[in-house]
Amino acid sequence: MSDCLFCKIAAGEIPSNKVYEDEQVYVFHDIDPQAPTHFLVIPKAHIVSCGAITAENSAVVAHCFEVISKVTKDLGLTDFRVVSNCGASAGQSVFHLHFHVLAGRDMTWPPG
Ligand code: 5GP
Ligand code: ZN
Image (cartoon, rainbow, N blue to C red; front, side):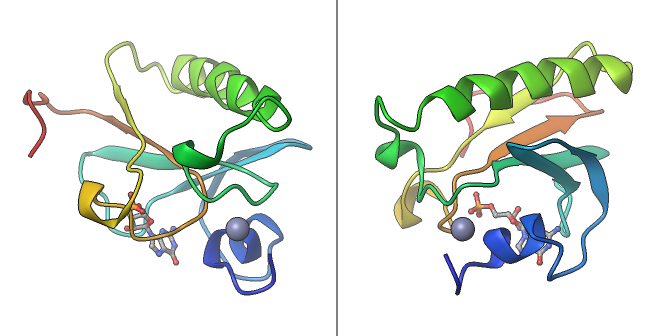
């Protein structure tokens, strides 16, 4: 999608602090970290949010979780939280599907 911040980051058109990349996904540090470790896992294909996952595009979502498992292992993280905000009132501010991965501090529940 031409006017999407995360599509531009995945394409390398906007700089980011990359953690991992393959053909399907891009992983980069959040610009405003909410924990000592906070990175985002995004499909390179534009999907608006968890609410736009279908039978046709869901394979990349499984791959995102494989990547989360691999990258957290590589970073030595055993305890971490995965969050995806869906819709503005749930906290979504960038409308390209992304999974926050947060680690390095105790997490509270329920989230605010
Ligand atoms: P959301 O609010 O949609 O759940 O998450 C969007 C996340 O993207 C936020 O945590 C925000 O800090 C991060 N973010 C917004 N703009 C940029 C950017 O230009 N670069 C990076 N690395 N992260 C960004
Ligand atoms: Zn996009």
